[in-house]
Length: 466
Image (tube, rainbow, N blue to C red; front, top):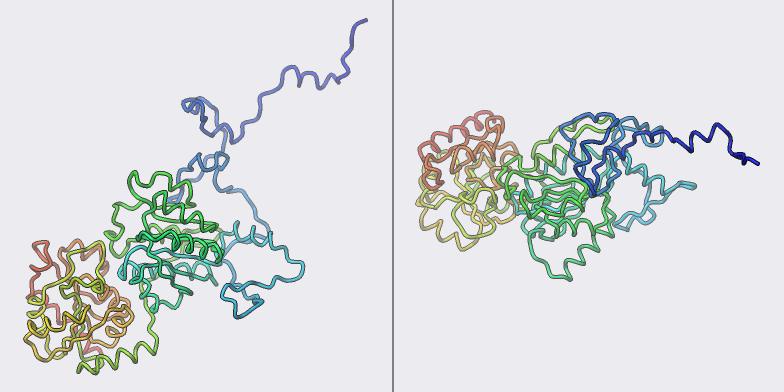
């Protein structure tokens, strides 16, 4: 008796001769066992739209990640546009972490998923490498975070000198001393990891060039997105596996980028996404408290200066860390002999020398022959900003004083060792009421004093406008 098949005839062709499987995103992925086979596999995936922000995906992170789905419709729950400020009350107003009271029937898990899909950021931590100068130039990044993500809480980790800058920034909630460039003890290292984990950050930004060690530190913070600069050489090996987004600078010294040293991070933060247009880069601005202004006013009046009738001189040669130099320009301090010639040319205003250490007071009194000068011992950027705010202008080398003068829109004369550095650290100088005087030999000590005297006309023009 012939055996009959129990399967329907319509299914048997499917079993005996199955059709080729439809092409999926598996065909476009590289083969780990035969890398050369990728060139022979067919690919029917839609071509991705190239944008200046698209980066090549690392297959070792997620081999099934094809990037963002351009055809995805989020619906009414995950809307486009900027996030809304969180106005819900807290359970305990005295709790600095602000535990929220969720409405009845509210699904906490869906809320977190919505935050991830929209890319909302409620809490952000910024790790800034460097001193006062580098932290001041990071202010536009913080302002962009506030503009791009309404209601965001921004915290900062910086060196002991860098933390002093944040009395000038009202957008920062907490500033902690933790030097990313230092070599902390194991107890301090693990304690800081615990602090970061307990604050539940959505985003962590770092300007320290990351290798595997610093990337591991950021990874252990348990933040959702971890963004950092990485080394432009082999030292960056392995860091990209632990970070959400990376930026590779042109050199191993990020500060050599000058005023726009953080342009890659600003470009990424302000990118157009979710129907939000590109966020413009804000200018450098600082805010001064009334208490700080009153303290500094009493200080410069005791030195014999009057409001609006003195010129701030900053950048005398000293070995003090309070000189507020940039790491990208080590030749940025002038000997007192050159400052003596510059001070003699000032007329109509009282020269006020800012010394970074009390030991320099005697040197200034001995070398500067002009008796009608003021000497102020100022070491913090907040006091220096308040002093500049009440002055008629600033004459300084490439220190934080020039950036503070531009932030407070005061006329200034910037002294640089070369013309190239002047353009890098003070771009669009004319718009900022700043005159750049550079040395022709490439050394700051050889600067042309006559050109500095000629540039002092800018102070007379500002006085006429007042």
